[in-house]
Amino acid sequence: MRKLFLLLIVPAFFACEEKDLTTENPAKNKDNVNIETSILYDTSTVHLDTIYTNNLGLEFYFTEMSFAFSDYTFAEKGDTILHRPEPFLITAKNQERLISRFITGGYSGQYGLRLGLDSAQGVGYTKAMAQDDELKNSSVFRLDADGIDHIVIKGKLFDPLDPLDSIGKIPFDIRIGTTAYSRSKISDVNNFSVSGTAVIPFIVQINLWPVFNDMQLYDRPVIKTDPTNQFDMDAALEVADSLQVNLF
Image (cartoon, rainbow, N blue to C red; front, side):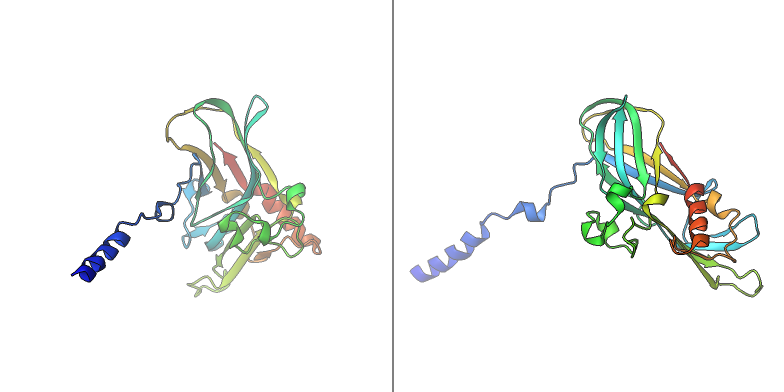
């Protein structure tokens, strides 16, 4: 009888053992600044596999796109309140990201963000240095170790010489990189207050229309930002300068 009693106690003891709640309920992300990206073609939201027609009559659709940003700041009257230099990646399938944190209070200032990496951070930047999982698992790292390909846009072009092309048989691959072709952006003054658990939206609007509306994709379906090819570098510079990025 005594043995049976002990056998009943042992399972009960282990059943009452405390669980490690930190593994079952990991700490929540306390950041409250949320990057909300809007990718447009003129005034329409871009959707992968939607067919677009540019001014030259070329028909095409996008299959993949990513944009790498870094050096997030918020400043009031010249004083930096927040600064997050670490790069992160926005993709067509993942357009939101919690990035930083404001403490409770009222604010009046400007957001800043860099598309790409500056020379201080970008030269020698490798996959092993990336802290952002989306960035680390991407293919934006350059072989020349001069920054990253901070703009990657891939898609398919319908062959204008083949009226029977119904699938878009000409692939295009545009990769804009190097620290020289990174671009710094800044918003107008934003006024807002932070309280409780409220999330502060930080809007990044990317418009592809200025890049693609007059682009001759048939003649130039691939841009690599290749420093050994001046024609390619000129094409990459045109894309870097044409892409419209606004912060709100």
